[in-house]
Image (cartoon, rainbow, N blue to C red; front, top):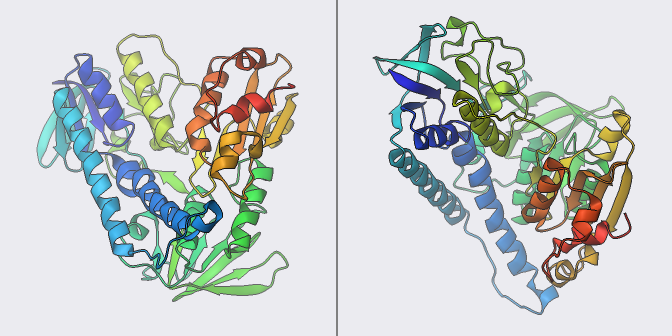
Length: 449
């Protein structure tokens, strides 16, 4: 009998397996595809690899602004795709090595829960039976494809999985959904000079993020040629044509060689025997602050909980779950979960936005500066501006930070630490930041707070 069985080898599953194995637990990890889950194989890593190639292409074609001239600049889509595959394989191999190093038994196949009680859980996989004292469910999420007529069995329709398998660039693309995934692919294909149309139901892209920053980013990409159809509802798809109604109720259409559906994701709670144990399922598997389900020896972490569908959230939830199993005091909190959109420029946010603070009745002071107040940003971003917004509560603590500009994904961690630990404006003002760095924008923004 194993001390712990884990179903799903994504950012929650493999992090949990590594932590548990390193602390002496006897662990079996079930994964039906590849270790790393959606994030590593069909999401975070492959998309960022593609986006970096696009950024390199942007640099090469825009070099004149920096006194650099290049001729005959071109891209080879297949080589971009091949490099993406190489990066993924390298990182998957790294996870396999971690599992081996911590004596985790990895079973490749579809696990199925056959039953259990508070003493023992029973699981089958590939015709073999397994028993474990505890179970951690990390089955993740899947792309939600809305029941729009003409979407099913349409060769032009892609989700995040199929679009990452392309080895040739489409001549044009329509993206249904202007969220994080939609905007990252819009950025990628726009950089390569491919016509992009984004159709979004909401009044603004990047729903839930800071409205000013979202509007500014949309304006940047609109100037670069991306066509945005806001407050528009897709009604049907016929071949390569997407039909939608605009905000006035008029029918419009958009055509693309490929059509990416990126309207959200949903927790995977079916197909692995969850119905055979008494756990509560709502939007996802319901858990407490220790990631424990209604069955004390069954835990869940990651997208399957249906709460915060981000890889870094999943990994932290996995750590909390393992700590709780081992009797180490730890709880999961969600007030300092960063979100990044890897467009060019990047968007990075954490904590409360102005809209959220106002809605919740939380008083705040807004500190705001253009990113051009940071010397290194000016040196590296010719003719480009950006925004840094920091929200401070009445106790002088940071409660939110929202930025537009490169490389905000690399310094948003400062705000993560500040919000997680209740660091005040005065404490940050007394902190020495390296110069010149773009991260100095944080201290500059808070100068008169």
